[in-house]
Amino acid sequence: MDAIGSYRRIGLAALILALVAGCAAALRHPTPEDARRVSVQWPSTRSADLERGRVVYVRRCAGCHTLVLPGTHATEDWPALVEAMSDKARLTPEEKTDVVRFLMALAPPPAR
Image 1 (cartoon, one colour):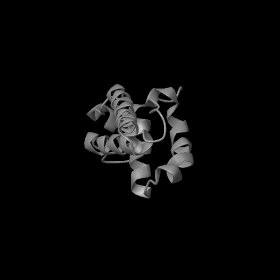
Image 2 (cartoon, helix red, strand yellow):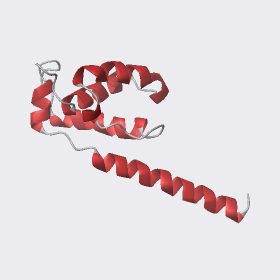
Image 3 (cartoon, rainbow, N blue to C red):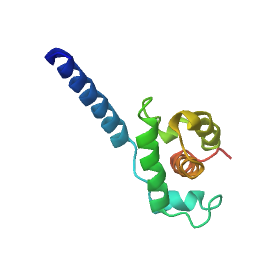
């Protein structure tokens, strides 16, 4: 590989890293209030559990596409959306649950 090809690869890697970092920065960290909102479905959920889902979401999903902010979809839509992408993201069942729980916690509550 020539020097120009090396510089292009380094530049492309830096651009991808900057995009991932930018998307992750827009994705807020969960709070104890977020954990309380989903504790009906997942009892004893803590903000640390939601943060684990956030980390998996950023690491696994941003590799293929721009991160979708949780408020972009209704709470009840997230399980099916994550399920549809879980094979591509190679999520374990536990990681899938963590990501769904995180996204549902930060998504707008269902209209009543």
